[in-house]
Image 1 (tube, rainbow, N blue to C red):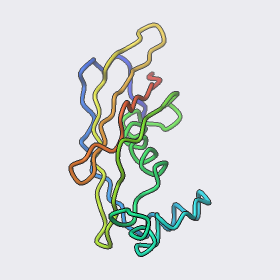
Image 2 (image 1 turned 135 degrees about the horizontal axis):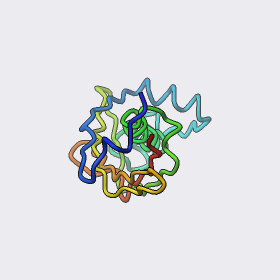
Image 3 (image 1 turned 30 degrees about the vertical axis):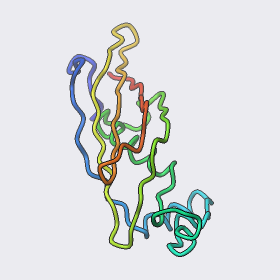
Length: 139
């Protein structure tokens, strides 16, 4: 059910939500996105170019964090703007990894009935997204 503007306040928290990521996830994402860069699938290659291991696609990471906001809003179509900067990698060893996503309502626009949500995304104790902001249309 879509979230109502009247039930949201500045300071409201989203999450934290843990999003698991396995290498199979990256293979599936590579197929869907057509990003077949071997740093996302081939451990030997990733390490040969100086990475600690296979890494998640940046756009997968951004999308996973965006899904947390969409779930909070009650409908992905309510996320009318979303942007971020990539600050670190999500390293995905053979045992898998986790992306931890949380957020806070930073401001409300009563006239437009929109909320600005600031997201925090970490993996392995490192912040992986910076300046992650979503604007959400509320009922």
